[in-house]
Image (tube, rainbow, N blue to C red; front, side, top):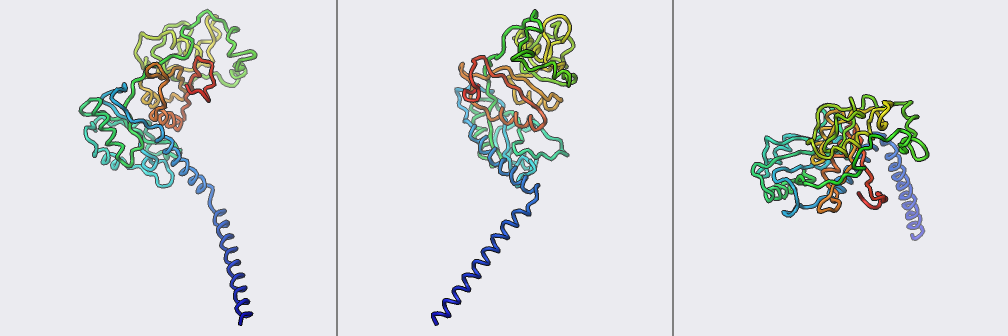
Amino acid sequence: MKKVRFVLSAIMLVIALFVSIIAVNFTFTGRSTLSAAEIAKAKAYSESLQHDRLMASYINAPSMDENFKDDEITIILDGEHSGIGVKDSYYDSNEVMAELGKVDNLDFDSIEELFEPDPSEVIESPTYRRMYNIKLEVPGKENVIDAIDELLELDMVLSAEPQYIYETVSTAISSPTSDTYYDEQWGLTGTYGIDVETAWEIADGSGIRVGIFERDIDTGHEDLAGRFGGSNFTPTGVEIAHGTHVGGIISAVQDNNMGVAGVSKATLYLLDRSNFVKSLDFAADNDIKITNASFAYTSNEQYAPANILHKQAIENYGEKGGLLICSAGNKGVNTDTIYH
């Protein structure tokens, strides 16, 4: 009897092992049958969740002693409700408006979607998020804080922040040098240069639009003749020297026997650094694919902390094909470790 039991146990063990081998083999075979598109979509979904977690870590609740506009809020929807073309993500404008309708004191006539995609466009970037700018019906800093508290109670709202008012510090030489000659522009040629003449053999930047975050620029400067597109997007009469200097580095007229040579023949557009998010939205909508930010945001004479609205605006600008170039500052430090 014991022998029979032993044989039966051995048989059952063999059967169990056989079934396990088949199950494991089926599992791996099943995995291998996933299409490249399915794998990519799963990866994008994972990255989307990670992005939301990262963005949420930047959120800081505003306080009454901080400097921000008393009538304006910008919100970011989470990945699930932004319609980014990955698992569990969809966008329904009626649902968004219905949810926002639960919040007191929002002026629905003022709601503006930023970085709005084309209706026929399928957004696949896992970092793209819907952004809305909203005014309050009754202004007041306390009302802004109350509305933000209510907005953050909504499941679809990833972030809600006021429009902070920062001071800015320019981060380029503060005056143009109109009598500098090409052979003194060590950044373009020579040991430390970018070998710009070889680049010019391939392309010279003609037809490219470049936005620069400056308060003003000397549109009558002889070395910038014909380099401007449209009118100034920012107030005039302040910091002309800095804007002219930055514009000259990018697009000063070449081979005209005066001044300096710009890196390109790009057309320049002024952007408003006091409205960073809207400026990048303006650039995205006006085929301005490159923007330059030669300044830093400060608060109480210290570098301002990371701002979730700015980060998401940069992500959305990139999704629309834009490239934002930031300065490294004037301190001579490693900005990978000492943030600027």
